[in-house]
Length: 136
Image (cartoon, rainbow, N blue to C red; front, top):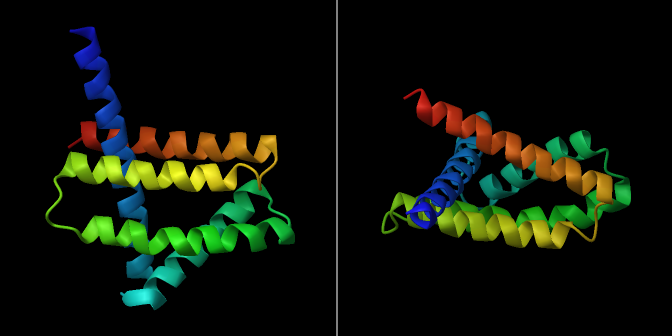
């Protein structure tokens, strides 16, 4: 019974993380005038890069290394978000996998402190999304 509750909690956390990412991406797209295609993906990735650079105080070299990782991630996130054949939990799990893969690519680029801060930022996003879900 406790295993089932733990699994459910993990899936809920993944779903909330996914929804947080999707919400941020939708807001970025709206702020960019509803751009579509590669241009919209690039704008979202660059916006995310700027936010990340400011929060983590990335060096110019780090920023240059992080940019292609975020540019590669953006269309994958968008494709999953727009895939109507996937249910919410499936989307959450796939988005979580992409986020984990991105984190694995970022870890060697970031200092230990920057990576810790990055993980804290992700956790805060997850908690905020959980609170939003509880208030609905």
